[in-house]
Image 1 (tube, helix red, strand yellow):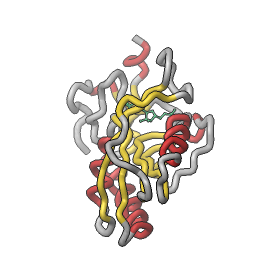
Image 2 (image 1 turned 90 degrees about the vertical axis):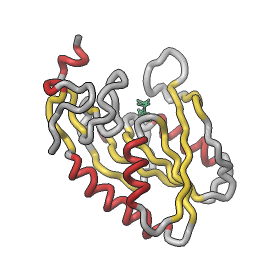
Image 3 (image 1 turned 45 degrees about the horizontal axis):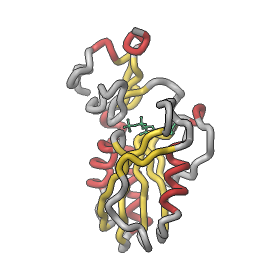
Image 4 (image 1 turned 45 degrees about the vertical axis):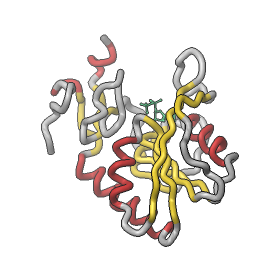
Length: 189
Ligand code: PRP
């Protein structure tokens, strides 16, 4: 495995590695095989949710071998005071694509409370999709506030503060190739 020092991450910032680069890659192989089996011969629109999903989108999409794909992006944010996961979501960047009659797969890095995804699913379903499913790399079952139907899931993880592989703390650590837990001294300062 690579050293803990990637980009601006200091070696002590990561308490421990939860999922290695190799574990993530192997899981994405499995997810891609399942998606390929389900969508073979169809055209699939992958929708990534900025910014956390960029890594999983880049890696998962390149592992699809039998599915014709195109890609689009949305950026959303919890509405109002900045309190995360209020369930009320504001669109910061909408899709370019028209979803009418399309097979759509939302690609997410993490499902925490599930509120973002729950809102997104109902929003996208109202746009006339032919089908809509979700692929998410990580899920925190203990943090769930709503049940979200996720067809392709990577790992269920404990309710800890995790960074890396797209996930940030104060916009840092997204480029770590693994998922690690953040050392408390980083966010307690
Ligand atoms: C993260 C993640 C999901 C959302 C999950 O995004 O990418 O979109 O939070 O949380 P929830 O299940 O509690 O709704 P974030 O708002 O941190 O933005 P980012 O992707 O730009 O880091």
